[in-house]
Length: 52
Image 1: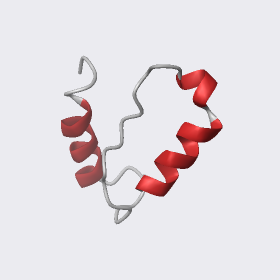
Image 2 (image 1 turned 135 degrees about the horizontal axis):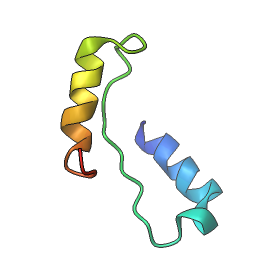
Image 3 (image 1 turned 45 degrees about the vertical axis):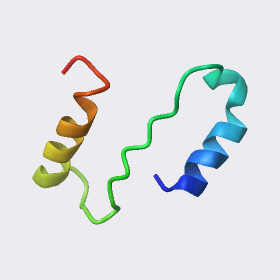
Image 4 (image 1 turned 90 degrees about the vertical axis):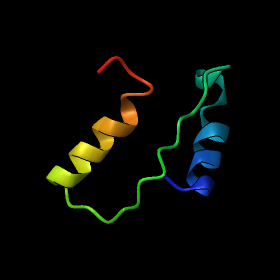
């Protein structure tokens, strides 16, 4: 998600987000669906935010 997309999500869903942060992983859109490298990158990036 790019900064402009994050800003649009934050604006559109401000009430739903409340004081919760919107986490932007800054992963480039260079991967195919379920590509093993993408899955590994997502797991590594999300581990800091989720109990994985």
